[in-house]
Structure formats: C-alpha cells, structure tokens
Image 1 (cartoon, rainbow, N blue to C red):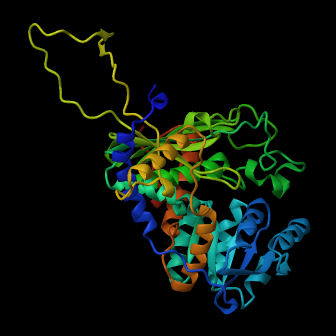
Image 2 (image 1 turned 90 degrees about the vertical axis):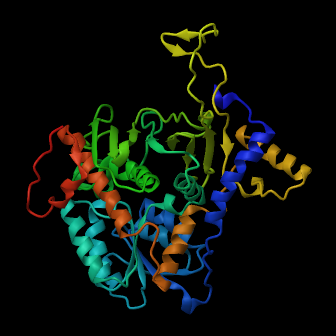
Image 3 (image 1 turned 120 degrees about the vertical axis):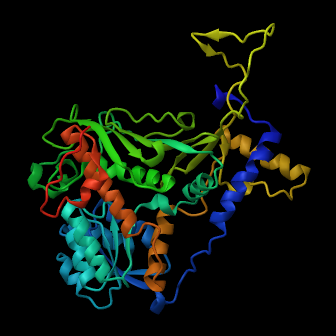
Length: 471
C-alpha cells in the first residue's frame, strides 16, 4: 500500500519545495502585535461559563490583548469556577443584560446553548458591543435574515464566529496549496467526526434528570440544539466551503436515532452528501458507536478531513490541548500518456478488464507545515540529510508536527485585534452565516428525506413556504 512505502530523499527535497512556498504565504502574514498596556487591552465579558465558556477562559487568561472584566451565568457553581479560572476578580452577573449595561465592556463572548445565540448576540450588538459568538451563529431561518440586517446597522462593530480551523496555520497552508493547484483539481472531500458514546459516554451528551426542562440537556433536544450537525458537522462543512471557495448547491442525507434511546430526539448517527458547483462534493459521517479514524495510519481517533485532488491528497486534523495537529500530503502517481498497443507487443496482464498496477501510488506521506523541516534551497548536504531524517521520523510517528500557535489562541488574539483595528475576521458574519445555513438545511434534508437546495433559505423565515424541489 502507498502509505507503507518510504519516500526517497530526492522526492522529499523536490516536493517539499511546493509546501515550503505555500507555507511561506501563511507565515509571511503580519503577526498580531501583543498589547500589554491595560488601557489598550480590549475589556471583555463572557455570557455563559459552562463547558465551552470555561474552555475559552483557560485560553483567554493567557491572551495579552484582552482583559476579562465581567462574567455571567445562571448557575452559581459555573460562575464561581469561571472566576477561579480567569483569576482576576471580574464582576459577576446572573442576568446578561446587566453585563451588557457596563460601559467599560468593549466586547462579549456568547458561549451559551445554541438556541440562545441569536437573541443574546442581537442584544449585545444593540448595546454597542463587539461580539464573538460560538458556532452556530444562528439557530432558525428567520434569524439568518434578522442578523444580517442587524449587522448591517452596526458596521463598525466586530462580529466573529468560533470556527477555529480558519485560524490554523496548517489549514491555511492547505488552502494555499489548493488555490495554487498543488493538489491538482480538488473534486472530493471526505470528513468524519466519530465518537464511541457506548464505551466512552460524553457528559455533555448524556441525558440528565429533568429531560427537556433541564437546560443542561440542551444538546439532545431539537428545541434547543441542532444535534450532531450543529455541534460537529458545522466545523467540517466550513472546511469544505473554504477549500472549495463556494457554498453547496444542495445537501441530501440520512439520519436516525438507533442506540442512544434515552428520551432525546436528536439523531445519534448521520450521513450527509453536499453537492458543490463544478461536480465537487463533500461526503460526511458522524456516528456514536465507534471512534475509529482511518487516516494517519490510525494514529488519531474521531475527527479529520481528507481533501482529494487529481495530483494529491491531504489528510488533516486540528490539534487539541493534549493532541497535536496533523497534516499529511500523499501525491498521486505521475500522469501517464495513453498506451496504444501495436501488433507483436506484449500485452499487460489484466484482471476483470482492469490493468494490474505494479508501480504503486505516488508515495507518501509527506508531513507539511513543519517549519524546522522545510527545505529552503540554501541547505548544505548535512542540513538536507537532517531535515530528511526529521521528516521521515515524523511519518513514522517518532517526531511530532506542531503548529507555532494553538488556533484557539490565534482566533482569540485576532478577535481582540479586530475590535481595535476594525479588520475583517477570517470567520466573519458571512462565514458564520453560511455555516449556520448548512446545519439547518442538512437537518431538513434528513428529516424530509429529500435534496434540500441552498437557495431555499432565501424564502425560509420570511413567512413564505418554499416549494420542495424534485429529487
């Protein structure tokens, strides 16, 4: 198999140049200047200090250009833990409107259950605050149109959504490779986020006492959540939109509730196909009975994307606090001219009409975006040998690829910077809106068992019922 074959030194040196050029585009972008003076820091409040809010606070405490001055949550224990986490004695509130009334709050983080994203974001914008809202940006079709109109009325305020892959140097490098044609024509992307909730139950997805009346169960009820599609698929359909540079034309799929039958009404497994212009396609899978990931020689579990082009494929996954990011490049075999058989020539062996391949694939994997392994063309013989060895050891799992900065830290620093300079976030309103729309229409496609066209959102939520398209 191709993944079992070693790549020669000559191949590594030759092909690494393309990655180095792509990476240089990303790395040459101006770094965010850290602001340490208290009067230059963005004063922020956080609304919602549950699981996601607490996670962000762990990162925010080390971000220099922002300072937490207020926290809000309806649960006192969550609020107390958040105060301990951030460690600088912010003001605390149970009612988020009191937090929004503070004049010294420049920005707010909206990290509440999904069904509350829009109403709180709306109030925050109307209060004159910059807003970082976790995905999905909105929950219902009518909120798509309402938030667009509201954001247009507040053009000087920053509105960013939490899609951290947009801030990953690995993913940015892959996007550059796609745009420069290094992977050839990219027609297919496969993505998955598999979890084993049988052997490893998630506290966030486990039914708690009180059922739908208990807001802690918000992820497992449709009245408050978009289910797996909103919580997981949203990250990866955004990757596909980004790599293809387009939104889908339609989505179709199948979802069911097969195993986790504890009173929840969201699906526990989903399979989706997104059709993009020019014959492009994203296939997606999220299940709850296995965490196996068939990428990276099964070195990682659960989540990843496979970006497939005519000249090469990228397997990639984002890092986490305890796991490193991975990005591997597999090249396609070189293009071959059509073979015309002539009388007297020996025919190639065939099986069931297919020519038997003896030359193997294009080799790989080649780890990308690892700065201490890049070939600049200025290396002496020994430097090249060392870099080759480091790359080879990385493919074997002995050495680790690492991003220079955690994408979560980068997205937070970038948000504060944009609050000050008015710059456009990488995950801006339209990126967040496209992602939210994909989630809504994906759930509709599974519920109604049909192709749902993305143009249908134009009439949804306006009091008009779109006419179903023929399958």
